[in-house]
Image 1 (cartoon, rainbow, N blue to C red):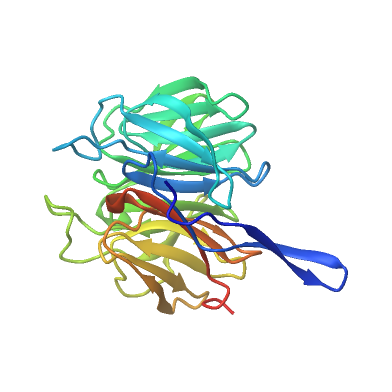
Image 2 (cartoon, rainbow, N blue to C red):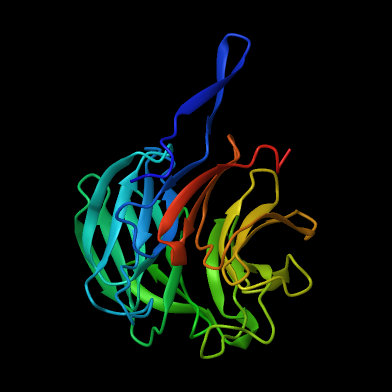
Amino acid sequence: MRALVPALFLTLAGCAAGPTRIEPWTVTQGMNAPESAYVDPVSGALFVSQIGLTQGGTPNDKDGNGRISKLAIDGQVVAADWATGLNSPKGMRSQGGTLWVSDVDELVAVDMATGKITKKIKIDGAKFLNDVACGPDGTVYVSDMLASRIYQFRNEKVSVLAEGEELEYPNGLLYESGALVVASWGKPEANFSTKVPGRLYRLDLASGKKSLITKEPVGNLDGVESDGRGGYVVTDWIAGKVLHVGSDGTVRTLRTFTRGTADLAYLPASKALILPHMLDNKVAGYDLSADLK
């Protein structure tokens, strides 16, 4: 059962309703290694990908246990098994009525009207597909953290956009004004720890130029979303932190949890954070309005 039964409330400005804000909520029922939370900007629906770990399993298993749940942003579960037939799904992003999902070595298209899988694109050479971003021209980008590579899917063809150590083992992706904002993990050891953690940077799609947002290594970065004012809200999976990175690259910790803070959703208008706690088998909503004034 949910630890808290939340309720939405409206902040009022005069006679007009202001941004919708959420009271803290937690969903645990049916959650098995939730990795990514994503709010579709068109419908406002919240989608949570679940890896579906078995005892002794890994987050890259091709076991058919993965699924996507559909929720409301107040934590109400709309459809626990909204999309099934997946292995270990991670990052998500919607475009044109399709929810694009990374799944081990496949990019999966899900019809948002029905929750049915319409397409699976096998990516040869992929090791650990992670986050997804979509460009306005219809291109879908997907990171491969273990291969230190970013793929692009355009005109029904997959190609390598960029690869190599200089990508710092990319995890989170965000399309922004002709570039990808990349949250990198750093070169992982066998246990996913790093000697040098990752940074946040911008990768120009036209030139391929990399521009650092954080000059120094920050952490084992997972999700990245815009704060709506030139900065970013980012998660550090290993440290269990939610970070704010300013437009000038300054970093501060907003919240600290246990290890496993995965790919977040963030709603700038209401300063609402929706965070999968992957190792705790829960997803939770937080009001960051006091943290991001």
